[in-house]
Length: 123
Image (tube, rainbow, N blue to C red; front, side, top):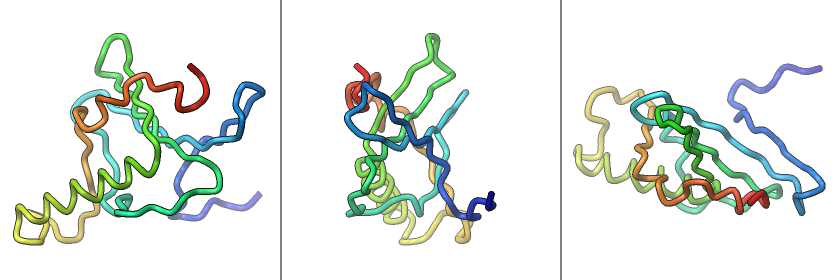
């Protein structure tokens, strides 16, 4: 078995008799604050993946735990737009560390996607 590529994205690939097709899921969890990802995850026009990809944001800070199921292209466009707006507020540069690729996602950015299991063919 070969070692995964250093920059590969960890997806869960899911298929079942209920699903019409296999899907890939990228899981992000938080126990407080924001979900963490990379600004380089953003893309103003992400390519269509041969296998549909969804991000599942898991909010462990809420009781009961909340799940937000968002299509990959929606997340990538959102990250791109939010990061561009951030840079615009800071003169086209990061406010502190120019080398950072960090990007935080606040709950209000995914709120409308709560419990959208139907997108995965599970609800």
